[in-house]
Image (cartoon, rainbow, N blue to C red; front, side, top):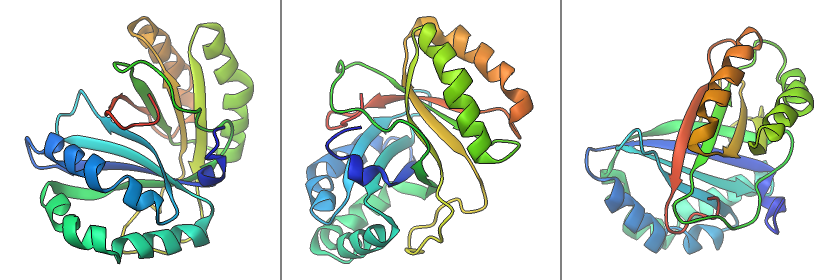
Length: 222
């Protein structure tokens, strides 16, 4: 966990679909106007990413101290002057911003800043067939150690936050229960991860969703 561990009690995993060719425009605006201004309102931005396989997707992570703090922070930011001035330009780049998971910790959190500029972060979303707590424990006790022995270090274990979304202006995927984990991987690990996903099929409602993310210049996670 980092100095910002207190901001990992509630985390949003946000994946936007953008108009073709406008991702870099949004990232430039985001990194110039929306990092310090959001953090000043009481949240932390952990990751900003391009999705190399999907040129019109933008993925980012932000965290809060708790659900009450989340509501206060979002009301402050989206009702404030920075979003009032630059929000319309950001919205013009987007087709959809509702692909959002609201999460809480289920294991190790995000590490501190560090990593190569050209690094990649892998995010995996699992829909457990049974109780998410049981799956989380199985992953921590069995899957994560096996991956670690093979050179894949997992971090950022989270599960669905079941509390009501108290800021409905920003919708989240409320009817799904997921377990989400992150890892730093290289090309040599692809076959191993595919095998792991196949081995977990009996414990999942559907095959896991796994995406490779490329950190932007101002991403803490990389």
